[in-house]
Amino acid sequence: MLDTWVAYIGEHGRPLSQPQEGLLNHVLVLPPLPHEGAGVLQEARLVPADQILEGSDLTGVPGSQKVSVRAGFHRLDYGPSTPGPRQLLGLFLSDVMIGDMEIDPNAPAGPESGIFGLESTPKDAAVIVLPVPFDATASYRRGAAEGPEAVLRASRQVDLLDLVTGSPWRDGIWMAPIDPVVEAWNGRARAAADRGAVAEVNGLGDELNAWVEERTEQALADGKLAITLGGDHSVSFGAIRAHARRHPGMGLLHFDAHADLRVAYEGYTWSHASILHNVIDLIEEIPTVVQVGVRDLCDQELEAIEGSGQRIRTLFDHEWAEARLTGGDLTGLVERTLAPLPQEVYVTFDIDGLDPTLCPGTGTPVPGGLSWHEAMLWLSALARSGRRIVGADLTEVAPRGAGPEEDSWDAIVGARLLYRLIGYALQTGRSV
Picture (cartoon, rainbow, N blue to C red):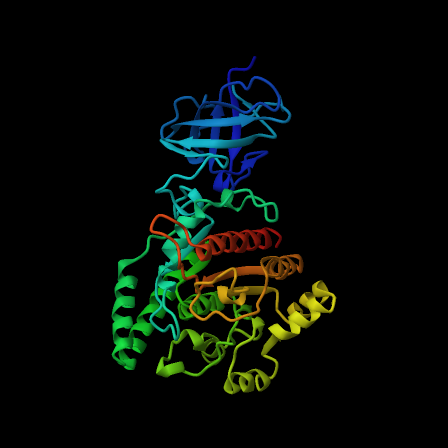
């Protein structure tokens, strides 16, 4: 029996069949595996690729670290790799432990673990989730500022295997810590709104937009999929503008009960009810917006849609409901509605676009809306169309009605919607 097996490991821990230049991150050195298909937990060494010298036996390379791994194989290649060791092909890995960190997709998440129970870092994660706990412009009910923390907690209960999109967790998902600066801005802006200090709220909105945009730009520059987690819908502006600059000509797919085309609603330039007006007015790089689920709007907003020269295309909720209730071809309607969107698409998802039984705590709930499976029909059709989801946000998740040690229904739905959005975005990114 051979003394050592070697597995080649690429970005985000993906096994490689051969040491591809530019893709090889580490070499995993394992003892012999007992038989095909085995999943035996055993000690191994993880060696950085840049530390490997030609002819090395790989057992004492500087910079290597001791790990444990549950590994098996489907077939063997007895050809030489480096002198001494042999290559293991068809490797599958799980339960990888680096230091004291264990990743077991079948195990329960720890109470202090990262989003979805993962221990990803900003360096190794393909996905960066930016929490923005700000809801000072809420025009009816506040509470969306508590959304990021609530979704984080509820995400630890989400099973990592998604039968629709696979295992998004394997790409690495990291949620940035909630920034006390943003919490302080929200506190000040809420207080200013309560006393009618509109200019102060607008000034704090300027600061928030710049903060979100800067951090989104950095994530994009690092090659990450950037996801913004609100907060009310106003927090999306900086993220959308950062994506539009990196992907000029991208389209916007907007899920919402509201058109969000009001001009400085209640005097607030950056009102959550004005987010789409601001996008249309200030971000020229976006040629097409498709809106889904809209069922609450004013005369001014309808005029904006009709006068947009088809830059804004809205499938109103009553049109969707009529097609559903009369046995219409929903898949065909979805595909026709998505057709004007360009190759690259940003998804902005206000959770109140869903039926309010799925988001009863959201700030401005409206009867009607999409069921869970209808929303997934839209996202799956977008993915199947060959378009690429370049970024996304989820907003207006407002946890209500749960006890101090319980997750609210809003957060439970929000966490699963976030995971599915990430899964579809990763799926479309790998297909181009």
